[in-house]
Length: 172
Image (cartoon, rainbow, N blue to C red; front, side, top):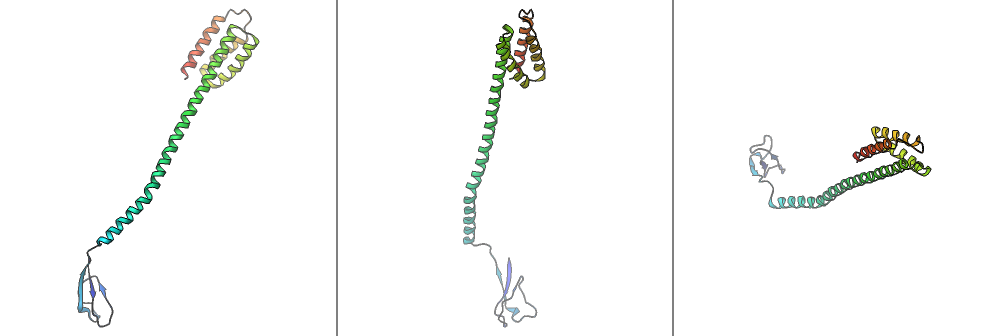
């Protein structure tokens, strides 16, 4: 950028103008000289670089810590969700296995103890299964509860329990 400055004016003041030439109405306007601005000096550049490096050295650890913490938090959330899913599957498997054992015992021997055990498992498994499996469980429940001591429908009960077991296996 080229600028002009008045030197040695008789009024004693300095006049800076963006052009070279005479300033009208000013004394000493004809004694102007042209000055060329060459930009930033080496010391200006080194100071700027030092400030940028200092700023980066302050921001870099903070940003790294922030992104690391976010990543670890997301990984923990995924881990907790997976652990909850595994525990839920184990819980349901325990319910299904308990029902199958109790139903098998109630079919083979309709003692009061077996019927009581079957009743507790039947209600719990009916709560956790889909509608189509629930219908078969309720059918088996009716057959077990309303059968006599010498029941001729043993084969039908066993077949229905086998069907329920197959349906429960596909739920995993």
